Length: 458
Image 1 (cartoon, rainbow, N blue to C red):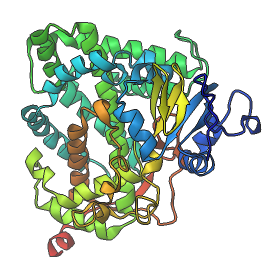
Image 2 (cartoon, one colour; image 1 turned 30 degrees about the horizontal axis):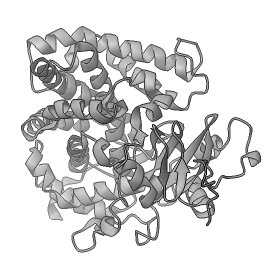
Image 3 (tube, rainbow, N blue to C red; image 1 turned 120 degrees about the vertical axis):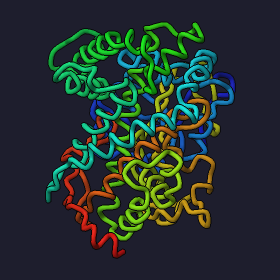
């Protein structure tokens, strides 16, 4: 495949799909929303790892495959910036969150915020989480058509409120439901067409603008209490870090909290939903994990949940098949080159690690649920440094990755100790991909109380 580049000028000429074959303005947006993975595969096979993609009325450079993704994520020349990329999609609603900061400023805030994710604090979050997870999951009512996604979404919001803010009792009646709706509106704005930062009715952007204001008001109202009476929650930790450093003011504490709550709430829900789906289709792996989790008891520590080897394998495989964030947004801040293709400054870039998770060049039978591929004996994720990147890579790799893993395992462990479930082998959830992917039908499962006599016998 040859790339036409005028040696006298830096002309951007990656291989492009025939845009005329798509609707004007809409471009490949509808194709992507219908099936992101199919779109990525088609582009990769037809146009290579670097090509043009018309999405939401703008031309993006699509980076596909681990080699291309590695260049953008490691970013050795500091040519790719997060803020302007994500800013185009959700900037006003997650403004100045860590994900939207770059270079020296990002490094400064990341170093400060790492204090909230050191091991002793993570162990404290686990102590808070474990009994809350246990009480919440054990209260679920089994049903042959139990919609797991909304149930998990509600539960993880409750957990986030307690672990991140120090208690759901801080909220007024009905306020948590409004907070949840505000988060959903802010995330859905990524695919909004009318991008006017005013509360315009009946538009995604308008609903997200109102949602952002609600979240700011909610956090600002509780900030003085968290500063005056700090606990083991993340909000308290950020207040203490801010006061000690002098480098984070109240507005930035709120900015970081909104971003962290969104990241933890949505990605944990997505991860556990995927694990439930795959284990519902594979009773042998479900039982393997259950037997290990039954040995933990109702309130496992962080160290105990980390030792459940099969749970870790299942989580990694679920993240491979169903990454919560299939595409990462960037914008170039200077002329650069990816695999021989020149990209000018100011270009929107879509880094698509989801495709790398499914390429047969790096994974055996990539569409098969096979947690053993992450075992010490196989380690297929080592086929390429960027073959498996559900948490991103480089300096922007998810700061809360260990926390998210711990919370996901605690939730699934409680599910395994209280219930068993099944999903028909011929069922594929209809996914909504107009923001972070989620099952439009709630992902119904046949949820049944665990037969403890059988479990003990096994």
